[in-house]
Length: 328
Image (tube, rainbow, N blue to C red; front, side):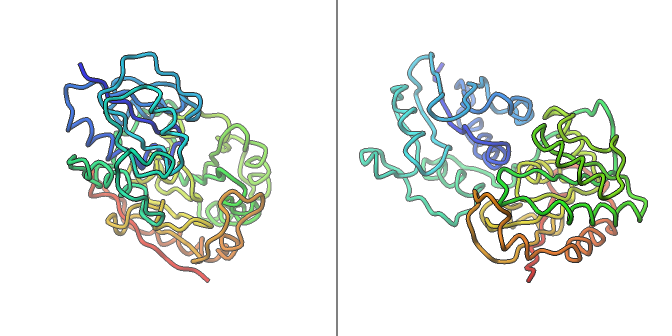
């Protein structure tokens, strides 16, 4: 049995943008053993993707440990830098599928296009190798919730860097508005964001029992997102989970543009994405100036509009969509 080794040692959102590519590989090579090198904490979501035979726990490219036979094919879905290729070449694969990199001039591949949407990027890479990829194949089957928060509004206060985190007082103002309307609200985030979430809840008058940040594992968080009537989030992995489950969203983007990592443009009508049209440093230690241009009024108006829409009663890909809205 031939082995296909795929490297995607990044975060939750990065994994979810690669789902159509992973499924395309599975269809193209049904008899091969597909191994995915990715962070161990993402295994519950990898299991939902159902296109991988083995997961190699890998926090980053340098941490990849491959003890299996030389792969027939190594697929670099990690990024534009040389780090992933360094590790993949050490596995001595018969062939590497990758974007072109100046550090490895002997490896063929398409040119990296910085402004390409992440879903398109990985599908395009496979297509240059003759593998058909369906960009719409993003959906996941929702996991079963142990504690149900059906039809809540999930406000996700987390972000991968301070630059992408909307200010706490603004989140609190949106939550107060939702509580006045009689909506059930839950606050999500990881264990490092629990204190922040508790502070936001205190400002908003939200009971501590509704603060789920730091109290859920990944599969429980996924179930909450899948059951929610609406997710309010920044540019983070939870936004991609909502897209995968067909949950309506109001997404606050900055400094990265939604054209690169937001819900794919072909998913019209389900998502409202607010963006000031201003680029910046996504890893900065303070909130991005463009993100700060998104005010509470814009978010509240978008939330009200999303919640006023008739709940969708079906299942499958047709329930997802997107609407971009420029603010400022």
